[in-house]
Image (cartoon, rainbow, N blue to C red; front, top):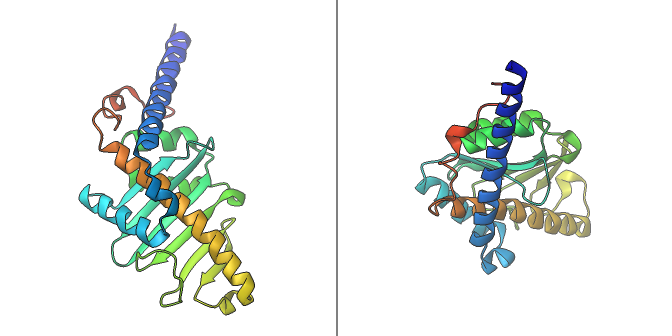
Amino acid sequence: MTTAFSTISQLVRSTAIAAMAAYLAAGAAAARTPADETATSAQLVTELVKLLTDKGLNAYAVEDPARPEHFVAVLAYPGVQLLVASARSTSTDYLKWQIAHKQYAEAYSALNGSAVPATKVFFQDLGCDGLTADGAQVDVMYERAAHQVLFDGNGKSSGLSKAEYAKKRAAAEAQYSTMLSMLLESLRASAAPGVDGSALAPAVQAPGQS
């Protein structure tokens, strides 16, 4: 009897989490705008920081709808720096639970702690102004958790030629913009009635509970 109850509880929990993900994915798709496709990271960061501030948040996290077990999370210090991470997590259910319960700061920490190193990309955006183009401020990207690239306007500090630096920065700009757009789409969608998942949250238990 106890085993049967535990199995039913797990099924209910999994169903609730799946429903939550479907709601958020649908809302995010509706929230995507054509401008997101051409916006620079500087433009996207400006909107993201404003949305976070308007909602009284300093952190946010979302599951990547195109890549199972992958998440994107942000921790903001407006005017100082924006920390954005993307990775596949080894604690998928736990991260989904935290996101469902709007425990975004915890989700950010959990993603960094459970990231598969080979999949992790991390941006330190100093000044919260997007990826620097002229080196006025030095922004940092970490690939595969440890490989560091400094965007300082010339690439010398990372041992890159001008051509290599330009290519690397263009690729990083595209990747950073994609991560920012994903966060923005979810934040916009969460403002729509019936899409924030609040009605489902009470039915979702923390992984490991029964």
